[in-house]
Amino acid sequence: NFWNAAYFNKETSYLHFPTFHGELSADISFLFKTSSSSGVFLENLGIKDFIRIELS
Image (cartoon, one colour):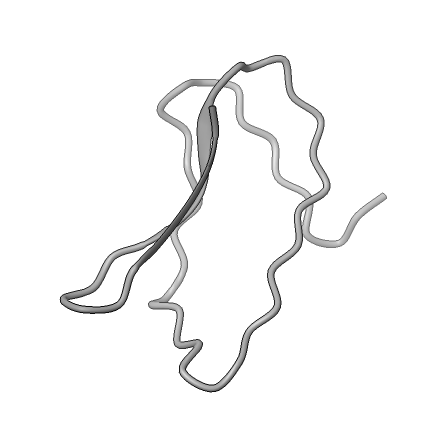
């Protein structure tokens, strides 16, 4: 039982969050179970600062 668990039942499913501001420091962790061979965990796009974490 996880307080922040998410379930995705389609390839097009996603969660949308406010812009991630990690200028000073940030911690990101994942605990997942999947049958997919690829996918994007986190994507934050910006003009100069961006991050993308994916399973491939």
